Image (cartoon, rainbow over all chains, first blue to last red; front, side, top):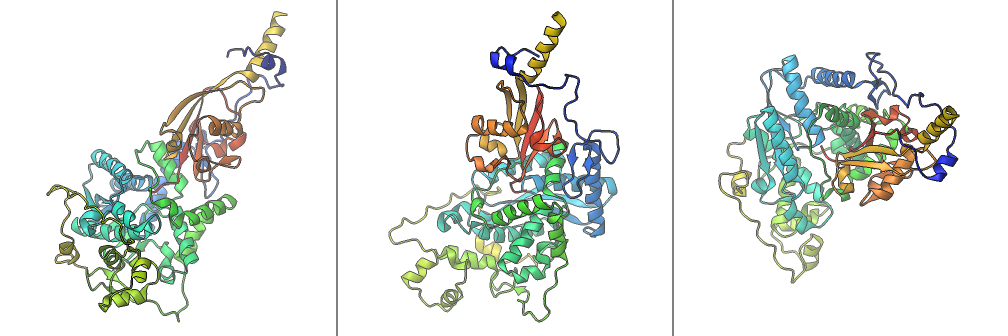
Length: 399
Length: 115
């Protein structure tokens, strides 16, 4: 330890304890009682060492899987893999627990390429690294293939807001279609307790009665789409997922989607973080409330049917994706966003729209250059843009 | 004489010794620091000891390249940023009041991005 040469330091040092005083040390692990604790668990406040935490996290996930009856032996499970922290931990855990406890599953990785330059290409690289390390099969579906529109192209037409509406709707279908193509019985996603709590808050804040009825997004399994889904990590606090990945040295990709800053979920997230600071169990408790929600029996709620155009699950004549695409294809990108029922009806009945009406639906102003064509990929690769018409008539996809 | 001078010198030296740290950023936080994840830093000599509290101020002034509101909120880190000191949760170490030692390792992991 060198001696500082500055006169002020040599002259003005305050009293300190002798050098033998120990620096601040963490408490001892409350599980094994021997190793120093490495983290304080957010929900309970218990201090655990690294080894005990990893073991507890794995065991709790296993118990949630068993108690929720999420899987059956012999099932093929497509893991929604984005390359981010949650899906990386999910894929790692499912593979580990399947081997350790003999679930008897066929696991595979399913990724969605939304076509967001600088964001998705880098995270897909992380998925491919995971695929090489784990040996699990990987399939990538892209918005350009499925819909003829990448998110970058949509954002150019739509502007900075409402992109997440398109992306969320398209991703849900993309996962279903990808899972069916791979012969999966089930989709597992990496949603964590914080995600679930935010969704509950958002559904309340928006008065989304349809989603509130379906457990406000908090239930173990969703039957909304074509393929059943589950969220094995829905009880896991985000902090523990990050620390699990850190202590296990798992490689994941993290950056903010370039279109996300305007997303409504950001407000719910900020609120949740404040609530959690005041009372850490709030995250788990919100999920608990959402799962147990029941609506008034006299409410009239939309029935579940199928889309007239593509056959996907829908509560209206056209599914949300088809409405959104209709808007994009006609150069009226806002057609599917906001309440434009009267204008949609006009279109459906073949009536022309006024200039003002077209402008409200997001049509480009007169004199704006028409958008450039998206480059077509090489045939036979992930980038090949299949004819959208073919894919949207599901000859062999049985919904 | 030699002993007293030696001990006094050692006490002053411990108070004023420069503190060298390995400061790391992960989970996307590195984007605020020119994308650099590992920073070997030496904190300047000062009469007051270095705690996490004044380390944060120092980081904001010296290392942070953009958008300070994504890293710091008031006196502390933005909610959603985890802090590890020598691989242990800072909540076990006194959080902002932890007194930094020479050769400590401080890791800031952002949890704020999609999974």
